Image (cartoon, rainbow, N blue to C red; front, side):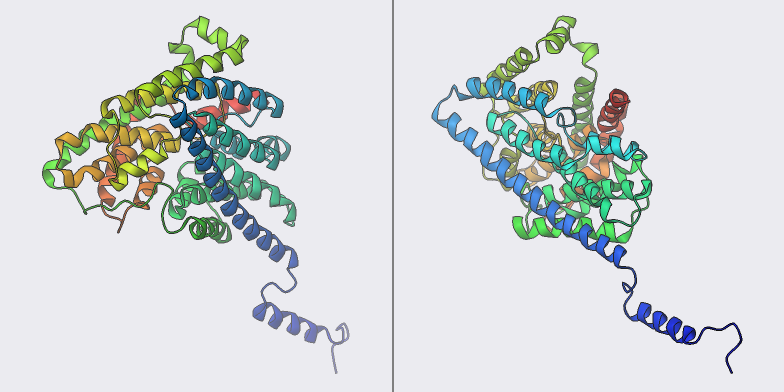
Length: 448
């Protein structure tokens, strides 16, 4: 006989639930399965959106180059007028569209305890507006990259999916923002491993280091989607390295990394410490007459572009250099002109990232060393220059190194890449600037 207080059939019911959960883990947990499904759909969306962004941006800049080839004076028309139009667009859309976009994701991480504040920094409306603005900026000839908009786009997509989770917690918001930003980097550069490193190194400072496995899968999935659409090449192409530099080249490589640290750290300092080096009259002009200031910056960039081919992100020139298809035109003018034009573009506040222009600065720096090394090692020195400047600008040496490592054939020169990245990032510490985190702090101070 069954015990007095037993319920007939209860043990059978528990046994049935037990074997169902073992055979079908999702049984009885439809909310969690639905959340995971939407997460992976979002990752696929990030991969498609980032690839579309890269393709559209390339088309926009190719149009600008075509117009410039047809009429030499085109930059003097497109840059000031395009800059003024984009400034008007930014003011119409509102805060959150300006600048790179990574600082907005970092600020959203720090503000994740207040979902409404975080949503003002990363949302689908801002992501779409930034998409339009970066394409317009490259069509105008400004020196802008794609990774910042891709990070904000990815973080916005995954952050908007939190409504499909059973509970909207602070930890969940952190995880979605970090994974979305990492997926954006992975898809934009067709470098999934670099996206994961970026999540832990750059965005991990503002969030818990633990990321569930399903979010890691989402980052990889975004990279795989981009890979299928891009092909098996990174955004900058595939570098064929000869496999390790001779011992005699190491001192030159160290000097290149040190200079890369100075170039990248100096750029970050100039971009963030404008009150220390810009005349007060220029600062007042930027504050009181923003359209006139942007137009003036556009004209100066056009003048610099007459001396060297500095327009756009620099990805096209860098790809050709790395592939060995052409020499850098006006080799010794490219770096200073690109540097000055890059600073001027940052001062305008137009939407756009800094990874691609920083890599092109590094390629320009590496080209200075080509007369000192054998022709067989020229691509290696350009690659080391790229990783050094990017590591110094972002103060994220692992991310910079793995972006370049994923571009190499056979992952040659891993140790040289890592060593140059860490050395350059160490040199950049003397400027006491952390690019994205300082900008994020400024955003939050205004929001609060």
